Image 1 (cartoon, rainbow, N blue to C red):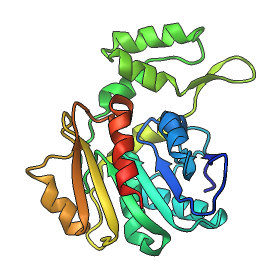
Image 2 (cartoon, helix red, strand yellow):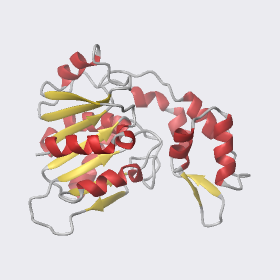
Image 3 (spheres, one colour):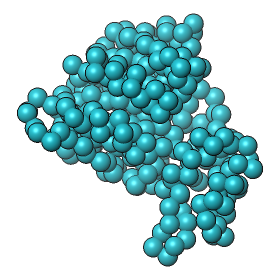
Image 4 (cartoon, rainbow, N blue to C red):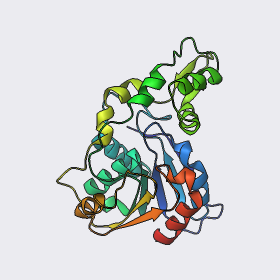
Length: 260
């Protein structure tokens, strides 16, 4: 599948720029990473990607990490990218990990943010239920949608994040940019563990929020090292799962030190 993406580049091209691909997480879009992407684009070519069934990329009933890894490979081949650094957050991190195992020759560095190769049980049922409580056919305003999400117990940050997917079509009716039906049907795919027959020995860094439980230092380090033997694992202070939103400067500092 051809993926929608935004490309950001330096004002002056010197010829030694890296090609950096950034993959968002579940319910996200390329725009979630625009601020960080713009900063990284001062020295590099940045590709902000909408993964399938998200943002402005196509929808498909086929939705798993193998599909998403193949989509990424197609984007790299179509754009004839070399010297690629892949950054993936959460679901995007799972995509990036599998891509590194399947196509190790296609990337020079791998950065995984707040996700481990292990299995994660489904834990988004409250969000899916809240999103499905919104009847788009009768919805009049975004404020109505936010109130419905609030009534389902979602905090303000989560509500604002989810509502970035809500837009008006040409006929002024509302629609979701994400394929909510397929996502809800196949949500268990998001937590799948890394395949046993893949590994990646290239330059790798895992970044966790120190307030997040997605990467547990006691249990996940050995799992990460099993698949990514040369991985370095760093923690960002005062950050939860949304490291890029909560501590962008700390994350940019790590990127600056790691991306060669």
